[in-house]
Length: 421
Image 1 (tube, rainbow, N blue to C red):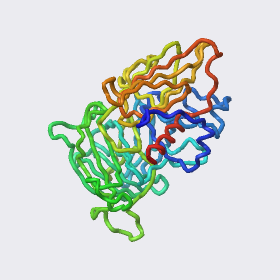
Image 2 (image 1 turned 135 degrees about the horizontal axis):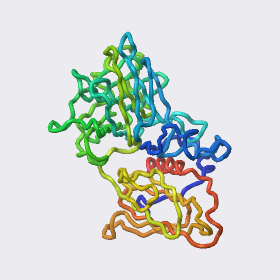
Image 3 (image 1 turned 30 degrees about the horizontal axis):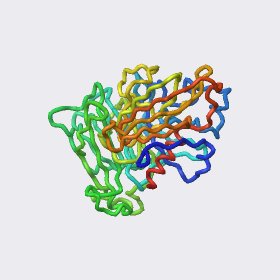
Image 4 (image 1 turned 135 degrees about the vertical axis):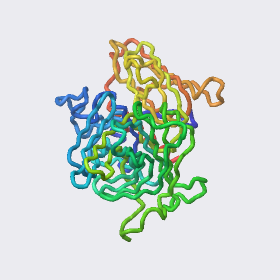
């Protein structure tokens, strides 16, 4: 598959030899019941150097990252996993009613690098399923280019208040924030599904809406936002707000204040509105942070196995939320051009891994359709179409040898390869 195709995985040692690469995508649906990966991960073993060696790339997992909480202002904070959702709660400050609690992924696979950041060199986005546990208080946020030390960044928020239920793009700097633009729910015939959750998408693009601007000019950097009910890929494709990063609505204020935050991490958060006794209480699920332009185009991945016991898939995004985790034949669905790593890492008796057979993209009538086989234990697949992947094992060989690669590293390298081409 020469056009997009798949990439053979590299071992962790090779990855660590590429120190300039510090960018990667991540996902989390909190189905494991934790937001901290270690030591609360069920697989964690304090006596196993596989988990505790700081040079081991297993410290990062693309769809099970380690979240950190940031209590900016308030009286009481609480967080945890509630029925498969990340729930954030904060009681507002008594005198002012201000409240803020953020959650972000900062630890990268290389222990020498913190801040998994996204910069203004290419399009990227954060999306999440969110719901309120009290529709009369607070606001739910997703952030781009956030700095959790100085608390600056750009936010996309939905307010829950009797006098304000709007969506807004905000410029946030510590204890002050400015609305760039406000809009109501994009569909006048419906309302946000507060019980089951509604979807957010917040896109950064270093180009203007017509694709004719200079991507190196911060005056041409834009935000695009979407919100919808229903399925993850049910967006109608219409942005209901677009707003330039450098804009007259951002107040000039201090001439030393840089209104263009050119890099930072991606965060979900809850915030108060300033009312005394405010208690923001929101939940998040299916968080996705990626390089590339957000799209409602989804791609299907079907996995089958022959004489194999198990395999590792990262990210493992099953289409059916009520899936059987032991059924690898179930359909997985990904946003267009998501990178997926397949790792045949579990021995099965006296069998050993034989090969992958990858069919796609799309059906046999597609002009790009190919059938490719590969004997490497780890392969990287870019979901530019629908794929059928079969893992085949064989008798003999004493099982699959230990493989020192961490799948996320391949994903990060794949991101760099795609951005460089």
